[in-house]
Length: 90
Image (cartoon, rainbow, N blue to C red; front, side, top):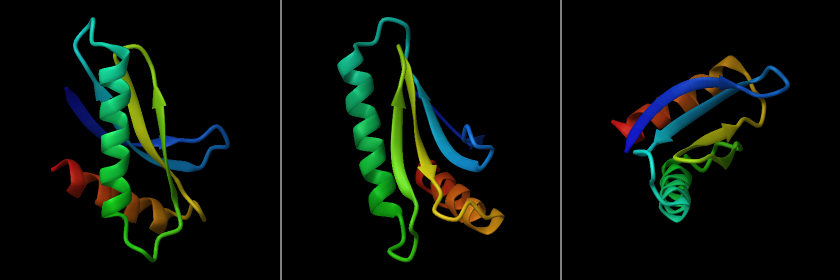
């Protein structure tokens, strides 16, 4: 499994920090979903209590993403989200 942290963009044009994951071709849908749920739980646990963003997931065939729906979508909040995701992925 490959994990990539990047700054995405919501459909409204606001920043959306994310971790994209990709699995080898033929990986079971259940494996992808389970990995996304586990990663989302890790992100929730790593999120400081002072942050108000929501942790969400999107799944595709052999890939998916965990992303932060920012509460205020300010550059500072996006930077804090990116720093937290980068620290989590390592």
